[in-house]
Image 1 (cartoon, helix red, strand yellow):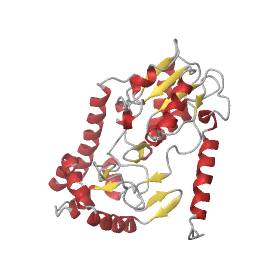
Image 2 (tube, helix red, strand yellow):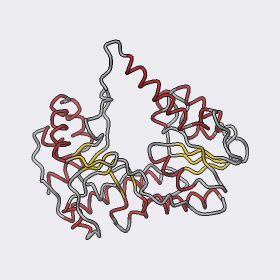
Image 3 (tube, helix red, strand yellow):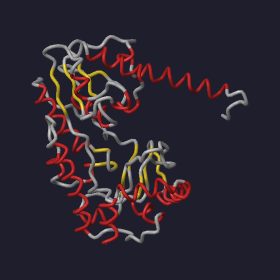
Length: 312
């Protein structure tokens, strides 16, 4: 339905979204009572997936918004929730993130005496999507249309830099090792759970996109988190693909590079619907043409990946 000239439909939609969000996070908003012995999982879009696999009757975890979606009121709600929590599972977050007291150290300070904390790494893996980046640059908060991911081949094209259409197997493996090496580096800065070894055996279920791990990562990661909590029980298999709302193409040369037991897929899958990769590419070309500053900054930020592609 199109909105009316006075914007009433838009206002109604906004109100409905607020109500739906409050219902979805009822315990976070104080509209429902959290279970006894509850914990909280804080982080990016991966946090809810970690909550799914660790939350059980033995160690329930309250559903909360991703940290990058929180405003000042949400930060206060989180602090109140943490003040009564039995445990906190959290990704590394810098102090005063987005001007709010959402840093890992700041959240730990709110916990009651005796509460456990487990710090888990934020995960990115390029081995299945060595063409892909999930980045933002200062001053440009807008995402490209259709999917909020960038293809280094299209960025290079927009910058006038010739690159290959695909990578040979050794280059695919090099991109994968680049991402695992970066994960090891960040693990070395201080986490309680390591995950870099989970990428030693490459299967299609390792990642949906460069920053969306699959069940092959989340389930063993969940086992490690439960063990670190000192909690009884094991990780919970939700019986469905985790973090699968957006799935990037699985290109034939990637399947061949890893000898995957999976069929190549040229399309994106977004919200369960297939989206033609060519349609996405054309939309992104238009977006890059309208945002030359992003292209220049992205080429600089993605320089190591661009070099891999230019050398292919």
